[in-house]
Image: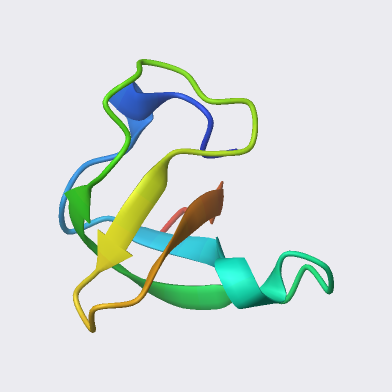
Length: 66
């Protein structure tokens, strides 16, 4: 699932984000959402979040846990 809708993202969710420095390469960083930084309900490049380890980036994909 992509990370463009704010309603799909909440603290404690496992996600892949793209950090600002990795936007050109598209390198993803996996982590757990600490809080949401985008107030809009939708963002075309992904909702911006802060991970529990302090890194900030836009959600590229929500990881489905089985």
